[in-house]
Image (spheres, helix red, strand yellow):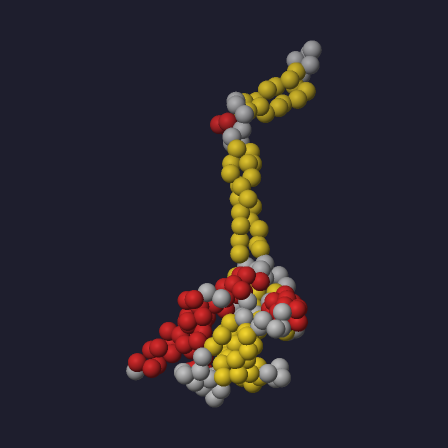
Length: 204
């Protein structure tokens, strides 16, 4: 499965360009760790959940007293890494891998927290388009018309409806493959699930 980073394709490229152009204004904190995450993840509730679980999962590098920063530089950086979704032929499901990864200032990967296992299976979204389709006729809905020639011989028999056939609403289903936002939402929900598990462990 070919791995790619969300930030590598879009966010990371933009960040590099931004840093190169505005390096003088980017804050640097040697004693903190940077949350180098997509803009969609820079929500107070999500950041609170992330910073709560990191000291419990990355405790070798991050303790509960270590502060974080966003839109900054630091000796450590947390990034969201997501593998390219895998679609099995003939199935309307997909799989992918997502993790929070800790890098040092040289870009070396130190440790990761698995959010979504590549063994997990997710269903594609389904939408329906309603089409108007004629209903079928049965014998009570039609009459037969017999056509004869001048000698009275039957030359044709046709079936005519008493009235125009009614229309049915027929749904046509379409399967939509996940977008980048879709897989990010799944990974986000995993953050909250991990926090709940860690909270239960600490209270027992």
